[in-house]
Image 1: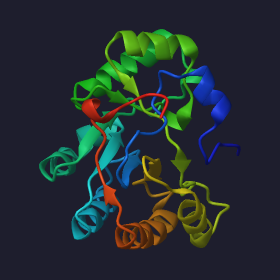
Image 2: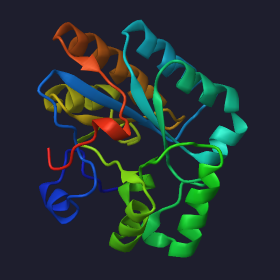
Image 3: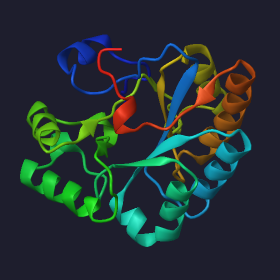
Length: 213
């Protein structure tokens, strides 16, 4: 399994119109959660965020929103933002473009957002261009917690995040069963440390996004 945990400068240069971080003069961090909502894990995440007065962005899979609409509504009610993560969690590199777009449109019936994050971070140049022309902002990341990686111990994920976050970071966690042991270990520690260091946690929205930060 190969992935870029920290923002890749070459990819940022190749795809400057995709969002990799947020320019900010203040100590702000942008947490995001992929693959939910989950009936147990997402409510736990929301409780932890509430404890620290933190806002975040949830990139939801459409089929999960259809199955758990009450949890999706709670995300919105509590002041967080949501984004489209396709209906079936499709890999853009391995999916016919027409099929891929139809899947995004299907998810859009349940997720009212023009923020989009490609599952696995895999999107072709053509798909990305077409999405932007359709009004979507493509949200990548500056730091991937790697909580989905079952080869890692929870403490490994915590050290990765602890050593690499900074103001303007877009950080990815997963509210999924696979990521649960690492995400739950890391998230609370991160919220405690960063809040104590004077950081606030903000949700991504169309107005907060500045490229090439």
